[in-house]
Length: 201
Image (cartoon, rainbow, N blue to C red; front, side, top):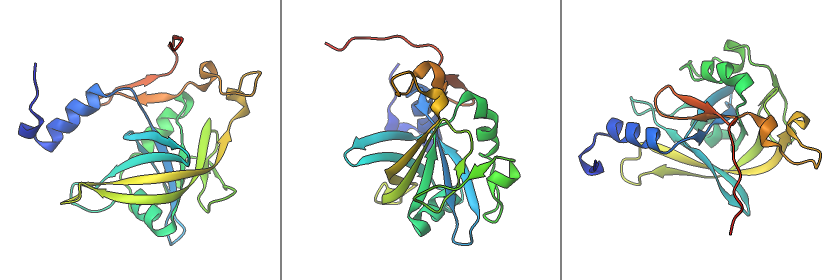
């Protein structure tokens, strides 16, 4: 089959892209509002885009009514965020934090997700996350330029917290111990429990 994306509605385009470009890692993003409310939300349009400087990219869509999500507004205001990776053990908590809540309500409190302070940013991080990146906002770019429907957050990594339990004897991350969750299309997810190796030519 062929798909002419110029003839698709935004929702149809999203469904085809989200169901074909898989699995996608999930950025479990924590931020803090100017009023001090800690926010936590998952995003699956997410990737590493640079190692020098070490930078992550998170796409935050606008809401259906055109308003900005709390994660984006908080990152704009503070210039800080924490990006956690989601283990299978925390998948239910991650899913619960996707609920739409008023800005004055913290997902940490609402979903009973334990938090702890960071070292370099004034944003809490999720207790038990296998990996958490303390980040500063390098750039926020509306996209597309005319009538943007999302914002791209370029997050420079300042410090990483890696659970010792996921490390191997050489002190490197062991994928067998990491057991991360990936996003597929619709309500489908996957785990990093099946792997194989290839030697690059």
